[in-house]
Amino acid sequence: MGPSDGPAGFEPAAVDLRDYVDFQESGPLSRRVFATDVVAVDLVGFEPQQVIAAQVLRTADVIYTVVGGRAWVVTDDAEVTLEPLQSVLIPAGVAHGVRNDAPDPLILQVVVSPPEDLPTPLTGPVEAPAADAGDAPTRSLLHRVRRALGG
Image 1 (tube, rainbow, N blue to C red):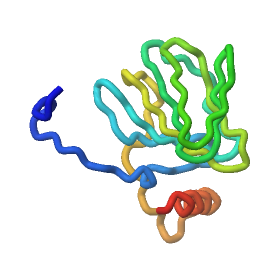
Image 2: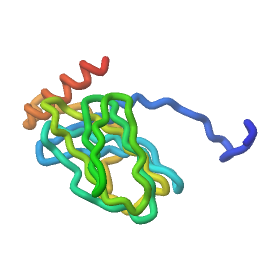
Image 3: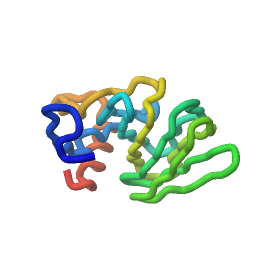
């Protein structure tokens, strides 16, 4: 592929993943960072003890990468613990789940190719909280994580 290959007028633009970090008390919160017909990239925030229940992506491979925290990825045959900046590939058709057993928040980057029918994540960066945000514990956690990540 040469420098002129690709969509006409495409210009790369960096995004700050810290803008996509978000959490909710009811379960992991996913935000879509990028999507094409070939690949989707999400950032998922887990509070302690939250899980993504077992799932099977029949036609898509998925790569989980820990941005911050610690993740446990479980299949029928194995369990792997991921530390920051470690990844695991789960091939299409393999049942798996993800959990955060740590006392700290988990930020997970999820790359799925080709995109599969997953629950539709929120799209785009987190909106700034209102001055009287009612979800104070979650916003406090978000503030601590963003500060730890340098944002």
